[in-house]
Length: 300
Image (tube, rainbow, N blue to C red):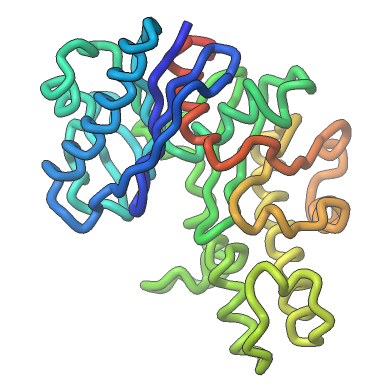
């Protein structure tokens, strides 16, 4: 069994053709065109799907359907209800529009939020697989702070498709910016901003090398980062009591997971830490597309 799956955001569309065992047979990338109107964006998505379809036909591969990982939320009826990185898609029924361009796949296109797809990929093929868990929280720590919820072995969307937006909750009094949000305290941009606010002057300091730096200001910023991320994770763990938390995103490569766990333990209800695993992701940046493929295979 095979699926065409894509993961798109404000910059690129990544596309794969993969088997139900997670083996990627074809992979390509194409600009999203997020600054263009919705028709252009949808046409770009349809084009990369058609390219994968041509590859499948040429190699006599049967495709069950199309999975799409996107940076927003889908209402039960199929409309995109939130998509900050691509404003032109707000309110668009992406499934319906793609079916017009790809009639062969009518009723065979599935849409899912990218953080949920990340969690699905790690659940089915990655770090959470060997733990045989049905309750996993996927956390993407990068330019933002995203959460994917797999509860009872299935993605949890809430009533209107927007469950898991913990990053937009506030540590502090709400403002018009993200300054006081969880995302504003535990993401890549926060590290750079805090370093400057705290008086850091070493221009060679970056988000990634800050973690191992001997610069005193950088060390102070990283300590606060671990403390804040520990608090955020504790809120989610106390609320949902998962068996596994898998962390991905660009910043995840630099995290000391033993140090993070100590911070989580500091703020989390003790019984919820029994048996809880906090793990680094094991799938590359194709996790979003692989997670979308899982939906096509009907494994959740």
